[in-house]
Length: 472
Image 1 (tube, rainbow, N blue to C red):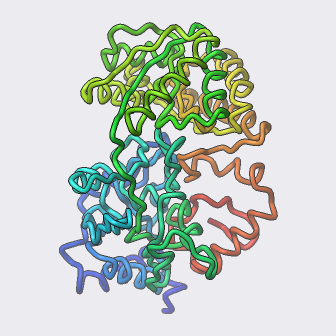
Image 2 (image 1 turned 45 degrees about the horizontal axis):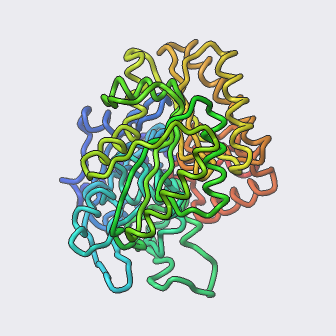
């Protein structure tokens, strides 16, 4: 019987039989392992993969994809499982390809401020291992994410206002295509005028065009001085106006984060932020030479004061700074702690910064009309924020939360924004892609998908809505 007419179960059996000959000890069908790989952090329903394969090299990934391509078996790449839009939920009769054992640092070029790593390495581990070089990798999405996963979702984070996102900090990649072919994109140089920009094509492709196995990263020098501060406001508009003026004046803040009163109350309780009130709050970090930091601080204070800022509380010691930023990174869990039995979904809108105040005003109206509790926080320095919608863990509660989510996204798109500033599309934002990009752009994306993955085995049903010549 030809493979393309065999049942899905038979095709899967053929793949596993083939792979067990060389990778038997790297294949697991244990229920606990399959369950761990059935979901990320999303509210999207989980689904068990039929098997989990632990890759230990680029060649392993090539072997797996070659077999899956030949037998038409879907594959979902898996790193840390921290994505929140359903990226790693497998379709039926699929294999979960786990890259978390691929954790080597392959090269560090300190003089050139770059390094090459395997995709399963986390950013925390990378920074710990290169600390003695005086360099660090700045993209900080908060969770224990792998660098390959961060590439796949075009991750961002609290330091993006100064250092940019993964798009700006990746020089090149090693990628395994659907057929098992291995290619390298980009390189170590800071610019090139040759060929198509394949590196950017794979950044943010969510494992639908190829599986990233190695990453060439830009590194940055550790700042001589770091200083963190908190400024609270009675009015959310005043806080947003302060941030807008900071960005427009070109003050090079390292990070600027916002929490609204609901989120601040949750974080005070969860993270024991003593000495703060449940008010709209901006968290700042300044970095550089001592004189430059002082200049940034003075300029920021001068802008906050006429916007009714209630003074700055400073965190000079490393311990105090870590406490503040840990509270920011723990904001999701703080919101969840407000209703431990509930579910939380996170919106991820971004708009031009001049329209952020307008969007937040509208979002507050939508939250009030919904009757739901929904703290708001975000990387407001680049116009990106999250609404953490807390809902009962029932079908009715989920529907109510998704309805609010759709209203928030519609407002962002109407203001020339995007449905996702950093979390990606996965399954959670498929409905918004045509409105944001238009039918013509989606047809080009589908053509790319069909060319590079003709059997649609790579993370099917994610990133790209179904349409002409593409069924997902």
